[in-house]
Image 1 (cartoon, rainbow, N blue to C red):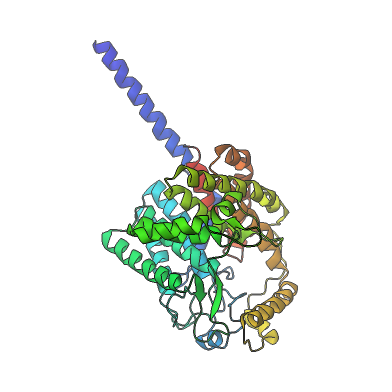
Image 2 (cartoon, helix red, strand yellow):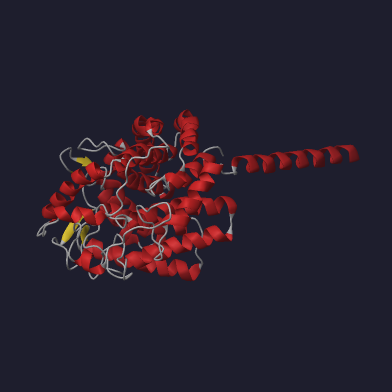
Amino acid sequence: MKIKLLKSLLNLLIAGTIILYSKQVICQPTVALNNAHKEIWRRFIDQNNILIDYADFNGIYPRPTSEEFRENKPNALAWWTPTENGSMFNGLYLDGICRRWIFFKKKEDKMKAKRLVKGLLLLASAGDTPGVICRSVATDSKTPPAMGSNDQTSPWFYGLWRYIYSGLPDKKEKKMIITKMLEVANVLKSLDWQLPTNSYSPSKYRNSLAGFEWESAPRLLFVLKAMHYLTGDEQWNKLYRVAAMEKGGESNRSRVEICAYGMYFDKNKVNRWTGVTSTVDLLALWEMETDPSLKKSYSDGLNASARSAASGLELWKKFDNNDDKYMMLDWRTLNQWWKPQYSLQDALDVAQKQLIELDKLSPRRPQELYNVRESIWMSWIITMATDRNLIDQHRKEILSAIDYFQYDKLYYSQFFPVESVWYRLQESKK
């Protein structure tokens, strides 16, 4: 009897050691991943707790003034400035930081997550029109660009939802965040999901969440589902159910059908990185959904998106870490192509002209964005597949890409998803 007991205890001890050892092996980030994390927090999180687009190797960048934003310079969308994507990047980066906290439960990671949340809440209150989710703020830490967009607004909701879903906030903070999310959601609902702009914008709205394409359908369904999940208010569930089955667009497909089809752009896009903002919403829908039919549709969409993204994975091999092409950081050079904007189309036209000239003036820029950003963001989409075989098929390639880049030599912050990618890879092993 004693021998059997000793054997049982020994087996338990061995099993526990294996589990601890396995956890240690799985959970140790690579040197490259740690370097990426350090660079983000050294150079790209600004004084307002907002993740900027680019900076030099010392973290210096030209921030627009309030006057420039109010004059719609370089354009009303604030495209091509280092303050272009704050609400998108903060919301998406919360995914990685929350996963990091879940793995290690370190106080420093919790505080970083809180900083990103603080930045998001600032961006929801900086505008002078209710419901505006701003991209960033000027040198006065108050004035935002004229326009946001759907790919700034849905990540704002996603980041705050992910923060709550991860169990990070206490009851008081959770209630405060949900109250703000509810406030914004109610405004957008009253506008039929059109996205309002600030008073100095040349257009009253900047696109919508209510379309019938990849860059709209998952986003609207996610916001509706998240608000029901967070509040328990049945009105959001009813709206969600109706929106899911509603049909429209040229293909006359329902939003659920669009989700099930996965990442697809009506217009051929060389850079598909913005597809992530819909994919994370699809993942969140899959996580929250209990209806087997809807859950399967979301799963199908995640797997289809992963298969589509795989074609962009190997772009990392085209990037030269020792590339010394010129990177132009002074966006004010683009003001020579600025002109007054009286409509959304005017703003888009000015921005497009500036982009053509920018890529000529800054040859480093397209190299870094296309080869680095695209391969990392497509990797992220792959790791969100529900089919583990799809992830395993590309696991080695993804890890090679993460370890290849020299993050302290990158001007753009868009490598930040490597954290989400790496932690998703670890989760898929469980």
